[in-house]
Each structure stands twice: as C-alpha cells, then as structure tokens.
Length: 273
Image (cartoon, rainbow, N blue to C red; front, side, top):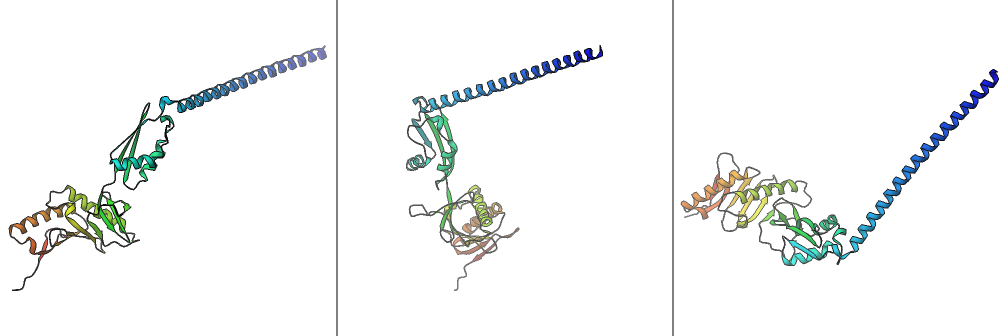
C-alpha cells in the first residue's frame, strides 16, 4: 500500500514539475516575444524616421535658398560664404552649424559667429569682426585686439594706423602678461575723459621690468605709466597737460613720470641762453 502511495506521490510531483516547467517556458517565451516586438517596433520607428528625414532632406520644401550674413562688409560677406562649406541646393535640415561656425571663425578677421536656421529656406549668419587697436612688433608685425589677443600678421593691404607695441622679444614667456597690461592701459584710455585718444598714441614701449612708456604723435614728451593704476594716472595726465597749456610750457616738456602714488615728475628741455 505504501509503495502504491509513494508511486502516486512521485507521479504527482513529476506532473507538478512538468507543469511548472511548462509555465516557466511559456512565460519566458512570452517575454521573448515582447522583447522581439519591442525591438521590431523600435526598428520600424527608426526606419520610418530615417526614411522621413531622407525624404525631407532631399525635398525642395526645406531647401536652403537664402543666406543672410550680417556684421561684415560686402566683400567679406562673399568670402565667408565661400569658406563656410555650405553646398548649393542643400537642405536646411542637413546643415551642420558647428562645422560652418568653425570654418568661418578660421578667417583671421572674424572673431565670433552666431548661426540661426529660419525654416523653411533661410540661414542667418551674424559675424563679429576683429577690431585691432595696436600693432605688436616681434619678429614680424601683428595686429592685436582690445582683449590682448594677437589675431593675424600685418599684410600689405592691412591698415597700420595703430600705435605700435615695442620692447617685446620673441619667445619671452612674459609676453602674454605684458600684452594684458598693454590692453589694460588701452581700455583705460578708451574709458577715460582725457584729451588723448588711442589714435594719438605713436608707441607703447614695454620696458624690461614690464613698465609702460608711451610716445605721442603730436606732443614732444614721453610718459612713464608704470605697471598698473592706469585710470588714476590717465586722469593725472589730463590735469598735467591742462596745467602745461595754461603756462605755455606744453612743448617744453621732455618727459612726464606718473609712476608715483602721490605725485608726478615733469622734466623740461633746458634751453641755454
């Protein structure tokens, strides 16, 4: 009797195990089917997107017909379009703005570029010109902007009506620091209420210790500005020039040393009787 019961119990256990295996297999199969359907749907969606993108890219509906370039001269506008890499009859959708921006900013006279797509047919390019304020004399002559960045070598057709920065030597590790100081002085001059302007500067000489000495186009004296505190010193220079004019000694001055915290020293030409 016990043997028959044991046999039935084993049989029931086998049936339970088979049913459990069958259920597990069914669940696994259902899960695999769900995964398969998910990836199938994803593939169909991707294919649909790619096909739609290719259709729109080749369609004339988003074709680039207008390129509007602002911020530069007419001559430069044509050059920028040429170097941008934009192909004719291209779709506005397929334009790579990062590449166009990089290509245009490689032009030596372009400081920055902003691009905007205006669907369906227009690309706006707003370019910012480099604006030189000085010529830096090293082994060659270079143009420098108000941020102290040397952006191109002076070429034959470039304007050279800028003050010249002298005293620097090629390869000197301190050149960057010195040019920042020159930039600080020039910016203070732009902002200052002074009879001098940047255009009236002839030369900005950087001494070995980093101090600045300036030479002027129309005034006979040089001015020692030191290394810092340029705004205060420019204001002092304004007062000194006014005083010299009143006393009719402006053109007798040989040098003005402003590199003091509490005074300025003016040296005059000594005239022998």
